[in-house]
Image (tube, rainbow, N blue to C red; front, side, top):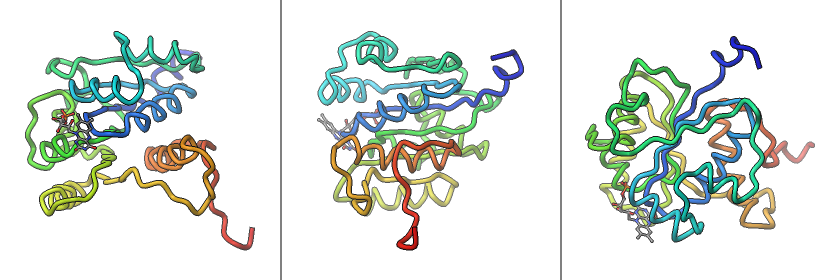
Length: 208
Ligand SMILES: Cc1cc2nc3c(=O)[nH]c(=O)nc-3n(C[C@H](O)[C@H](O)[C@H](O)COP(=O)(O)O)c2cc1C
């Protein structure tokens, strides 16, 4: 890859919160790292605890975790891991240009902070910056059932330009494994980010 390619590489922010569904964030990072892209990853303290509980994450970094799981990385892909308490990080500023932020999984706590414009950690601040700069912001909640407060927060965010993309897998493609279900959700996230991919089959109608 030459310098021009490096400059044109997509930059994507991924945040993982303390909601169930760490596997969605992991799968998203794996899919992104298979192409030449810069991923800026922030994991909240609760997100780290859920990662440990649901995925056996006991590593210093996501890079180490992915290496341990023998994940293939594109030579032009980089993963930059940021501290959720680092208010000086690149993604805290609107002048740092990127092509979108995904919060997967997204807790109701972080959903509420984003809906209220509260920015007391780097994930909240980066989400707030996406909204003010008009950049794609995709929130992937797992919570069920949803209270009126949750629904109001989601509506507020959708009206502000965010995409609420619940981790609700479809069954119409006859998934066989948990991986198929997860891939179906991650495929919708990649679609919204504008990536070409074939990680899940697409419906092409009964005429196909
Ligand atoms: C095992 C476990 C599962 C949880 N699952 C969810 C969930 O699915 N959705 C949610 O909103 N909160 C969930 N929580 C609660 C959040 O972790 C908690 O609200 C936390 O403060 C979120 O912080 P964060 O937004 O900074 O990540 C869960 C907590 C635990 C311990």
